[in-house]
Length: 489
Image 1: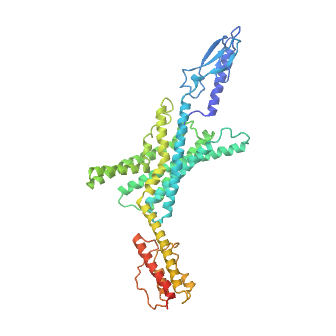
Image 2: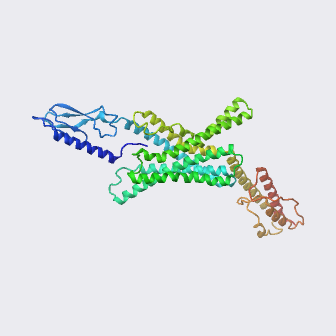
Image 3: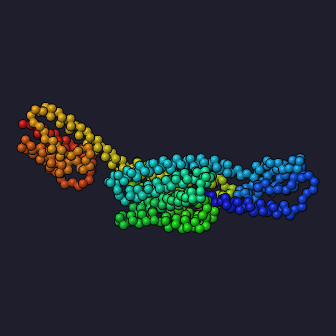
């Protein structure tokens, strides 16, 4: 996020300043009498000074923020006994941005940590729902599931990277060089995974835009053939850019955890493909809005209803396509490095806020409030509840029949064991095999057969709640007849 010099570069500049100070000290003639001798106190270069005076020198030019404090001075008093004081006044040479900037960044970090944590939990639940219900498996939801997975990978990698960078700087104390090397390698691996996950997330957002555009524009679409291409775009394209970035960082900027971008030209290897995906999605978004406007006008609806539906569609598409990223796409870190702190903080806040909570919004809009998902969950719940209720009713009725006819005949348990478990079975209720079995059992002692006609059904679950209820009522009737058949004379 920052192009500031690394610690090694800062140390090199400090050594250059020190050598220049020593050259000046040796070249200038010394003052006679009682004076404070010229010296270098590891911060600034001080000349000879008379007792009871205050010496001022320009802020050292090796400071990373020297451009900000180039007009400032550092002060040091020369005591009456000809000795420089140990305390200097360098308040004019201290950058005020890092203190304010650091507090703001700490608040931003808390915000996006909460956002990514909430998004991670919601996305894991949403992905589990879409995977569990096989009726929801279609091209649209398959793309949604891959998008959810990319959001999960992004949130996890960022949280892991932050956790690794939170360790104290003196981690090497009491450790050998092998431990330090392993720690650095682990941190760099986390950075590589974070860059890959961010790229993959942006390209799955691009896939969402391409698929939505194809649905509205292309009349004939063979979805099976295109899904393989979508996977190559979402998971394969980021590798094309991450691998060169890893090679460049290892060869030319193999320092610390690869967090800092000393040469911003190398950073364009990651930035340019993200910017390309964002721009393509933005143009797709504009085209989709035009298509929606034309379709809404064709329906000749009221003006208020027209505006509401258009606004609803637009707001729903923004998190799915990542349109918020367009706001500051062309505001680079270099352009806000000096003299534009408010613009940098604004850009940083918008990026971190929307990127961290985007996964939560997508999970809510495209899973939790989706009518199709809600219908499947409600159907599953009602089917399970009806099955449990009928099983309890059957057990209660069967136990009463046994008590009434307990002295007449013993009920063969072998035949009852063949009956299906209503609560645990996952097959269709009232399938032809179950109906035939129940009819054959009900003929014992009665000599008649329940007449009904069954139609062939597939192996899927009941298509509606009404059909489920009819199947369960029929099964309940057959179970009761079967139970009473054994105890009747």
